[in-house]
Image 1: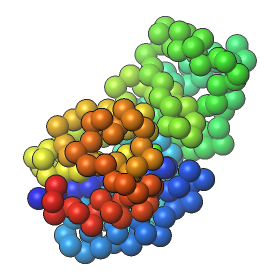
Image 2: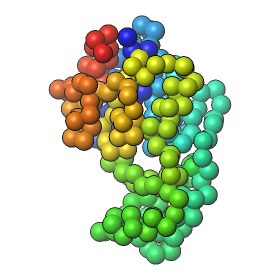
Image 3: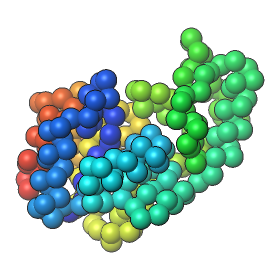
Image 4: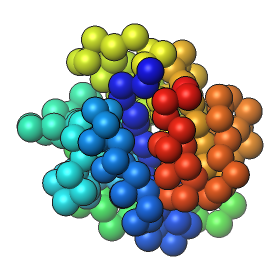
Length: 222
Ligand code: CA
């Protein structure tokens, strides 16, 4: 029986234009009313995750910056921004990327858009820094090494003292792979990347929020 559900945000409870699905919201509320704890995790920033938790009434902790910061009743960063910022400044100096708007609110990562054809060059340079890069499908992120959604899920497992088979994770893109690599249950909407589909226990035939509503309606079968 699943006791804790962790949902990615962009592309999972939103569509490709980042519009949140009202069906997903209703299904989250129904799951919570049935006693499930729901948590959200995203590459987005704490002010956004704070607002989602408060305004959607999410009953579990939420995680920003790919798992680098938690908000429940307090904000808890697990990493610092020093090393991602050091690498980002190098990329700017070499004119390899542009920053993203939400960098104004980050604790431990930096978002960027690579300039044309510069993805490989940026990867190569990153080897000289204690960082990892990830592509959310919406923007790229510079993270501390070890900072990923899997790290946050391990924190949640500790916090709730839950056995991993009581946890269901849902996501759609490559930055979800670290949490899909854990021995938890996994489900994906139909728009998910093939890499995640091949790891999933259940693949919904529906996209985005409709897929999440479908998954949450079957939660007792996981
Ligand atoms: Ca996503």
